[in-house]
Image (cartoon, rainbow, N blue to C red; front, side, top):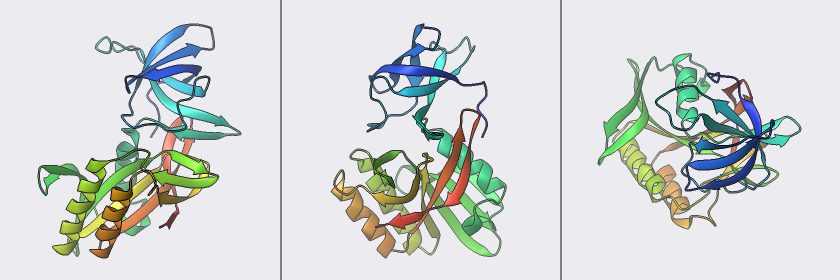
Length: 234
């Protein structure tokens, strides 16, 4: 998934009110960017962090920049826009690039299911059970090479696991898809110390038949694409 406009580098001054970030551009201008991430962004929002912004000239948008990447140096990046994983994964699913799901030809996003929920993707094929796919963007890393989810308590995430478990028990495929928006990790695990209830919900979901897939991403200031499968550590 290519960015619509070329990204520009900046330094983070501060992130506040979850969706706002004051930044300094390389030419010295101070601007406010939209931060499309409601999470804690643990380890990613320290003042002075090198970041990349996407400018826009849309008259309907009050803020003319969107925060897209954290630059860790040495060619490593983290994607902070939580809307990107679904867009990138949809493109990969439609192109048959996810090996475990390549035989599904129908990809429907945001389908209602369960109790007032929407599944990120409902996949269908004539010779296979429907597959319900819930996507989680993973950006936390507190140990070299290890990505973690979640970065804060997520009752919503635990609810989604319960819904997936019920789909698996009904005979469908139910898949939790961790998309790691970091280029410096080769494993992913659950941050049980941050949210023990989520860890318990994941254990129950897996016992009910929910599958767990994890992939990394290839990230640079031009694009974000799905990469390789990762090892999940429970």
